[in-house]
Length: 332
Image 1: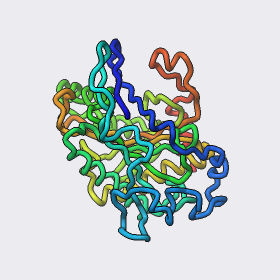
Image 2: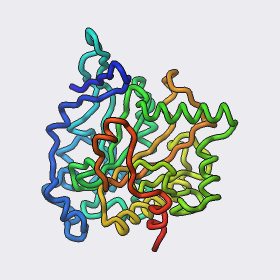
Image 3: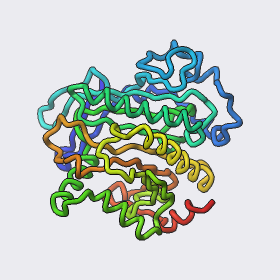
Image 4: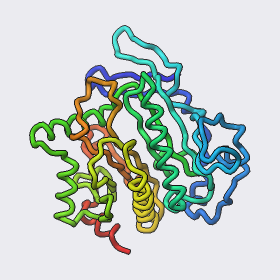
């Protein structure tokens, strides 16, 4: 059973999930996965592939039936579930690891997310929206976090492309700080800080990777890792759930563009991408306003190793200036 433990000094939460230690790992195959053409479209040993549906309880699939293209299943080695650990401790602060942990699987075993057909990528994003919407209606949920891990260094334990959804009973500190900081900026300046950021990046141009009609892709001014990219909608929306069908189809193409840049320019590195969106409005602890927050998608290549300085100080050393990274990623 999982439980959250809070550091009594820093107030940061840590999720202890012993069940995650039992998950399968096919790390030895990741080198072959660097070239998808070396893999079969269906792997008889992969539990995510068509033909192995009976191995996983299904939450939903699109379309229904054996010809599914995107499938949602509970994570068998869940970090969060509906049976938590202790609710209290005699000295430290503990809360149950209650929530949801799901896996979103795209059908082809041998097609990286960067190279999915536009229609399948759009469907994948549409499922992200639906799971966010559905899980947000659970009374215990205050934040829904959608992410994808790629490669061994990105924390992926399975080659088959998939994403994960975590629904947590509180707003994580990083999101809390980001949303609250946006709110404070709005109260002081009467504007969304992310909308202002878009204008600044379009003016400077030196960190812009792609200027799309609906989205801007740029390397953040204070990137934590080399070649990090941020995808942000030019139209102000606080929640990813509210993305229109047309905007979502644009995002499918833009996200593929960004991931393909990593594939070709950095030789298919491990990476993580995740969506930052407005928390569920059950919490009164995080101050926010629909006008002050702006959803965005972060892409973090995992090509460096954090050492004692980063881990001990929470100050990150980045060896590549974002202006240099953008120049590399812009090249054809």
